[in-house]
Image (cartoon, rainbow, N blue to C red; front, side, top):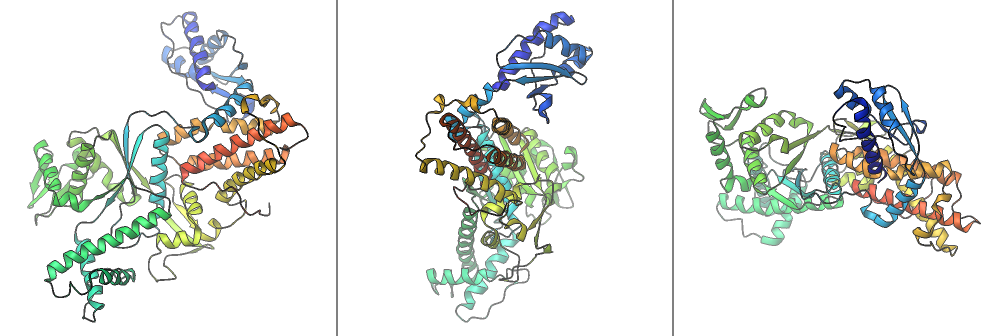
Length: 557
């Protein structure tokens, strides 16, 4: 990579400059950035500022010494100092042509990092298996899945996990609600309990159970019937949830049951482990965790005065279980309403003997749903909360995922259905996908003209000298670094911005540079540029979980 060659060149110059400056050692790390404006060079380094501060020398003096000692390099066209000590480097275009060859050679692997051998678990969605996923789950699902994809691209071995909140009173209410709907199928009087689940989906669940078990549960003891109906109903709801997530492009490696933590004794064991650390105490008949020792605003109950464990106790058991599986890092994706849980969960990890920095909790803000500027809160079909399936039916997976990933997690999203589904070039997802489809159309047109691409190694890529061509090549070259930074920051939204910039530069190239020309060599070079841009767009959209269409209906531009 050109960046590594430049870092080595500057590092060697700094080593020579060290003796000139009368210091013993040179900086081992050289940071490079891409200036926002081309007139400042292709790459810029602040190494003189950082090093100068450390050795207490004027950064401009340090920068001048480094520049004086830079060895000639065929890939560097000029070097200049700027500001109070920045070093700006202009490189020749040859490296851009090497980038294009790399894209062609690596294909879907372009931008990805070699495996690190480290394991990360990304846990997201975490539904209550008592009903269909509602639209509020959409951002969690899209964000968690994209973060997992980015970590995979960054070389981690990734496991996606869905934690099922299938314990506690909510499940008792669910069992009683399913029972009421089951009994109704046979004309027996029954009522949904107060606080139970009223949705019409439960009628369908009950009918499905009747088809399978008939009336065999009518005259069994109530406790046995509810336990059986809980199992039957939960299984069907989980199948429903899995189906919805599959439609949304989300797959999980594991589904983990909170109920299992309780039934296996894992919750009790975790509380006992915490007691042995000295971070618990008893008061008012309850067992408390000293969460304030870890920065929480108050201590937290583990075991209530009635002997029942809290949800936080299950969180502690889940931490123990996760670390027992050998993950190097744990990522939780939670809604912003869980803000108060962060310090206590990380504190519990530390109390249990684990590095709290290995526990990372990403919080995302809620989504406000609109239609034509008017708030949408209820389903037209059922009069209840809008389900994720309904959103997919109306908007589509691509538009929904892209829009939900287009903002930083800590920003609220105003999701307007009419805007998101608009098929015009002012709609970002359509704009990016249309660029990909347009490239595919160009390549098809060339093939229809009988033009076959020669091996990229033989193509005269140096013919790509138009400013629009060079700008597109520069943007393509940025993908590996953009993916690395996006993975490190857990920031898929950066990729949507990059995708839109790539699309804009391709559309400009398409306008300024005819691809299929009377010049065979130029045609070959531009076709390969199209191939590289198409592959880059494909790779970005793949990380976002958005399709890369080969054709799309033309729109008024």
